[in-house]
Image (cartoon, rainbow, N blue to C red; front, side, top):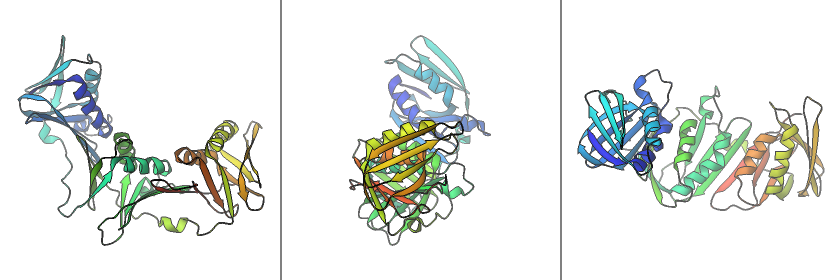
Length: 370
């Protein structure tokens, strides 16, 4: 293998696959990326056996070939190279030589035949097209509610639900739930559900362009999800499990409705959080006809009180919420007016934007005993 390409192009392509590479691996080869040069292109592949990222970049291929090399070392070398330089990669037996202007490096390699790759999608895999910006938006709106290292492994990811008229993303950690729906017409015989692992969701959010409205191709079968982006192929295994019936979590009716300015609430929560408990940052929310009082205290007997104007339809009412969870929700709502629907101090609240824009977004927040 002997190839040449601009440093910036190689750096961009390499950076796009690093999210799938783990430095601490029981298999040494999983700390490597595979370099495959052929037909005027360099294909770079990274994997952790669950998530695979494949990036393709144009290159001058003097001699075709493939190998694997340590991802971190290669990235550090390319990142520190002069911006407009040309990188020359040459495979000589078990060594990869990197020449950049007057700098020369020699890295150890491992045989590409031992590098694991994801299988191709099943023949009967379902294929859909969706604007890239929409998928990024739906992930941004819901990712905060995914569980982390929960024994209920199916919560450590995002539910993707496909029906004949909508695509939905749902996440929950048992204390809060986020729901985002995008209306579109799909040819599916029945409702389909898939659970995408947390790491894959966060990596996908990093790769998707929120300003790109071009459609991306999505392939789904019972074992994996594959998405084709511009010059990049994203493949992840799915979590094998049954997701909770999220529809049952959404209360059918509420007795009280609060309407308030999103930015005002966000700022108040930020200030109130300063003096809340570190481990369980709870606050007391007292709803009145024309104002909301937010009270916090901590183990040092310190306290804070915030009052902000609201419109409230209901009797005076007090409930406890986790400030961080509520702040996370408010941060992803784009509408300037937030609605909070309440029933009683023991029931979950429904939080939503005043009007739905591109997607329909709903948030459920469990109350907190103080």
